[in-house]
Image (cartoon, rainbow, N blue to C red; front, side):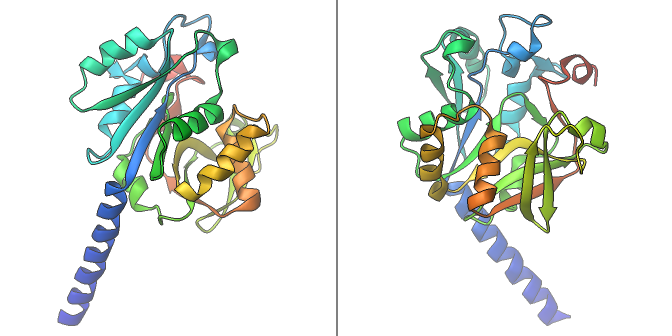
Amino acid sequence: MFSSSLSHSKVHRQARYVYDNLLAAMKCLILAAGFGTRLHPRVTNQSKALLEYQGKPLLSHLVAKIPRDIAVMVSTNLKFEADFRRWQQGIDREIDLCVEEIWSDEQKRGAVGSLNFWVTTKNISQDLLVIASDNYFGFDFWQFIAAYDGNNTLVAVHDVGDKSQASQFGVVRMDGKILAELEEKPPKPRSSLIATAGYIFPPRVFPILQQYCSSGTRDNLGSFISHLIDIDRVHGYLFTEPWFDIGNNYSSSNKK
């Protein structure tokens, strides 16, 4: 009994050491440079990230769930910069607001292009937690980070419970903890497991990201994950807590 207790304590200390070191060497980028076109005409002239859910902006929910040890960057564009500056003043932690010099949807880089732009511009060489600002996650991100092995890309995976609903998203197949396949918006999903827009990328993936963007494919992060699955090892973190994409169901999510 005594020996088992010591062994458990040692494992706990080792896990805590790994987790603390990951936090010390990790940054976070929240992607919010889009123009919310999926919500037109219900919502116009407002970033999806700043839409309210349960009394506060969706972006505030995300930031509150990120460990305070992690430096947080939030991307936006010139059209919504003033709105984000006002939001930034009401947050009780330091936020690096990264403004892309674009005014319209036609000028946007796309999610993958924006990620690559800031990785390059900020010269990021640390593990990077990446979150799309239109996603709500019911878990605290330390749980996600604790599942990261420090070497392989990690994707937050959710079971929507109904295959027909999964057709709106990137549907995944898992082999243990490995992401074996990701199919974008299949008409007949084979699974109810979907890839959400929560990721951790190791810096060794950044050259692959840059090469991928140079081919002209810059919009969909799910397509980039599919590319990584083909050439590298990608892990999945399956979670059961609530999740939604506000761009898909703004009206219903706001009633929860």
